[in-house]
Length: 157
Image 1 (cartoon, rainbow, N blue to C red):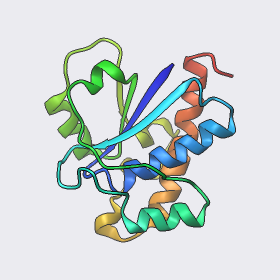
Image 2 (cartoon, rainbow, N blue to C red):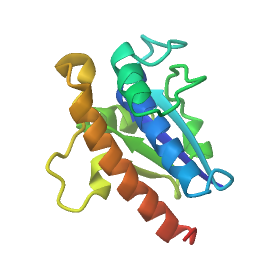
Image 3 (tube, rainbow, N blue to C red):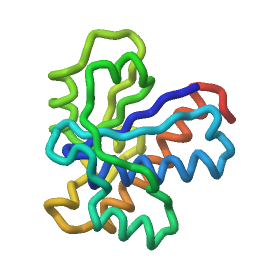
Image 4 (cartoon, helix red, strand yellow):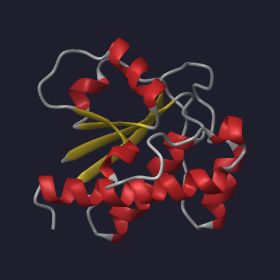
């Protein structure tokens, strides 16, 4: 089993969007029994909250389920559980490195690092930009490349 954790600031916009999109992609490839997916935030402001209405709106529009998603904060034990911790931007990476425990297996990268020659290096936070469509485009592209990477690394083709 491969465990993937998506991380953003508050776990209400970008990371739950990535979790939902990636879960659908994984299901479409019949890999749900092999890949476990979750999301979390570096901050604690929204613990227990559902995804932001903008995230819910675009996911509803694309017919992607976010059922049962509730915001939670990243915990040091996540490094024991997850093989991949995928951040949305540079600040998330800095925050993760503050709580990161020394390990030898968890891959901690930004989502857009998996895209060859990405047009952006960070997924902009639609909580501040208001542009959930652009965030969706970037997250979808990143998730597609991340899934391909995981399939190659774990022989799931």
